Length: 252
Picture (tube, rainbow, N blue to C red):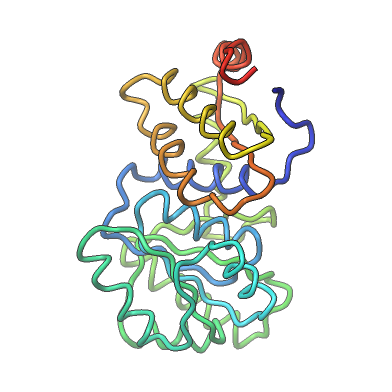
């Protein structure tokens, strides 16, 4: 078993997004992550937020995106009104349990409603291409960003597009961590779910007890990503860890 040279980028993107969230704060229970758009990067945030322990609300009215998050299980619920979204989210926020909700609605009408209700997330991100926005939509987004930031929300750009001020690119948070720990991202393909479970157990056994980031990832990924086919696992590894895993009889 060797890493895939050209892996599907879904799981690597989720891992990078989760790592960014963990760098911002290790504990997300009781927090709300709000985002606009459910393209692959937006869907990755919904999944990563669930792994991190947050409640997330992603707003999109693109039927292709919504069908895909239902198919992959990226979101736990798809609702059509903000009232429904708040109803399913509020108990989970109070209980500090994760939940990913997709709101099938016009992102800017919903954003105006969120602002009108005084709902403030702990993190806000948008995956809508700036070039596609009307002046009115840009104005709504700018006002929302200002309001969220003034209340202490983190503004993070997770997509590959050039981030706009005042959003912080996720790579700015990731790069120092990866350099400090000498991690590179490896993705391993497997022939069966059983082989993947064996790998996860072996990888967990290699980690130090205080390695909260990778432990949480390996413990949550089998549950959250169980629909992904073919089976694979992405993981941050040092060079020595990489060779140790490859030499293990359980995964060789």
